[in-house]
Image (cartoon, rainbow, N blue to C red; front, top):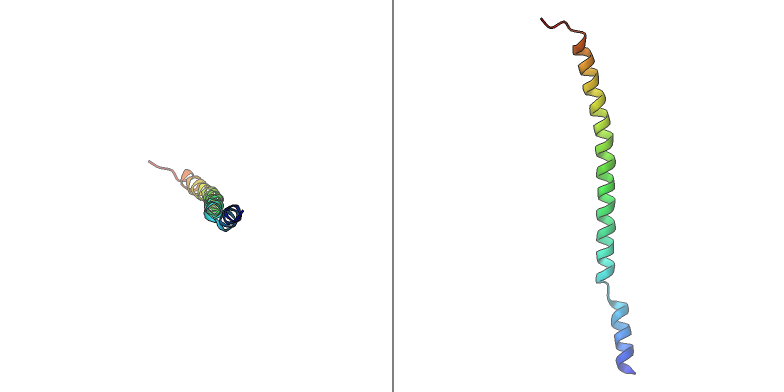
Length: 62
């Protein structure tokens, strides 16, 4: 019976899977932050270039 309790104790102390899950969650959180940031910046850049294009559109080019 001593062997089974040692195996159970070793299984409880095992934390490799937990670390992998933590890294996976961290990577997912970083990916979401990058997507949100890129979307916000992309929308603002689109507005800026639209305004610049409209401004140049009012200028007569020979």
